[in-house]
Amino acid sequence: MSKKTISIIGAGEFGRFIVQYLTPEFDVSILDPYQDLSDIECTPLSSIVGVAQADFILLAVPVKAMDAVCADLKPHIKSGQTIIELASVKMIPRDILKRSFGGMDGVNLLGVHALFGPTSGKNGIEGLNVTVSDIVGDKFDAVYGFLEKLNLNITVCTAEEHDQQMAYVQGLTHLLAKTFNEMDIPEIFLTTKTYDLLDQMWKTIRDDSDDLFDLIQSQNPYVSDVREKFLKITHEIDNRYRD
Image (tube, rainbow, N blue to C red; front, side, top):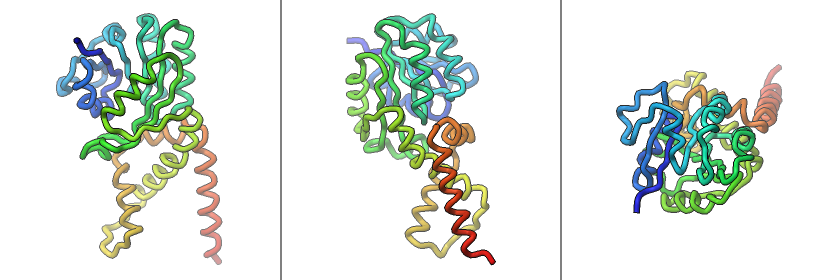
């Protein structure tokens, strides 16, 4: 029995990272005109037409590019195919997918967010968290089953629930990490357990791209309120100790 086919659009850090977990189950191909694909152990593609031949299509592209990618992809999509967006936010990508493909008969749409990446998953991804947001179609069980085979900790949620949670889980933690990174903190040798955990947190995500930080802070509609509340409270605390 031949494998199902899966194509990835986007060979950034995460797109490259997931290839190793897809190849045992799928024939994998990848498209990214801006990246050198020679070091990726799957089939490189040269056009969106090649992507559109796959059973499953993964969008590992920035949210700001998703509208244009979906517009290019739409003329080539057929009934029975499944399109999955992998963004760190869910409401805006969900709306893009529904607007682009929601009226097409038999096209399946899902949102998946792996709450890990090349750094946090460098020692393996078993037991790490992933969310699944069903949008349109009947491929939810197939996608859920594949994630189960990877022994991931799966949470099913709506796009709204996802973004509300991520406003704290990512919006706040990445803000703290960005602040730590730009404070130029010296090497600390007199640490506490609490400081060690904080140090581990910011070092885990300090190498994430500026694009990811911008995405989390600007494309999740709930983050601005969390950020405003955090800054307001820190300002109030600071004022207590001023003359």
